[in-house]
Amino acid sequence: MIVSHKYRYIFIKTNKTAGTSVEIALSKFCGPDDIITPISPVDEQKRTELGYRGPQNYQAPISQYGVKDALKLMTKGKQKTKFYNHMSAREVIDFVGQDIWDQYFTFCFERNPWDRIVSLYYWRNKTEPRPTISEFIESPDPQMLKNRGINLYTIDGEVVVDRVCKFENLADDLEEIRKQVGIPEPLELPNAKSGHRKDKRSYCEILSDDDRDRVAEMFSDEIERLGYTWE
Image: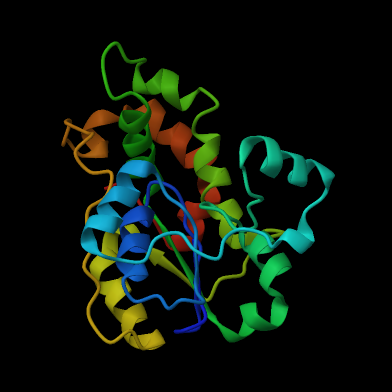
């Protein structure tokens, strides 16, 4: 998640939508006052190797510490976090204020839910033995895609970001946003978290008819809002 005061935008980071790659690309142009939340150690190493800004300004000031926060700092060296990776629009508004939220350009990415399910399946089950994908769809895991997807960029069922971009149009949508907020150079995506999925078949080949219908039921809001189809 990024709050850029330099370019006046807020990036809400959803899950399994190339969010880490987008975040790393954006961080190249962030200023010293911008908020950048931590990502995984492997991805942070990649960001460091590229010479981009890393996590900054995401921790709470000491003035906002309670007794438990102070004890954690003293005993474990753990600082209180104010902003974090997959943070919801509601939480961001609570911290930055409605005025900044309204004045800044706010955006996120969404993805075809059938394809997103398959991506999460292989991310969570990198090696054999794996459950079947039908078993995975019926598990609690797909709910995470709601919690770190549509639930992040809506409040009381209403979309509150200025733009929900599509993973399928990643390069073009990102270029439009880059121009809109005034970032001076094209963004270069580093393909973070790639290489884990060896099965390159289309989701149409991987999912059964029953799987298709179950995912359509679970993600009906996303499908209706963004016009996703099984193809």
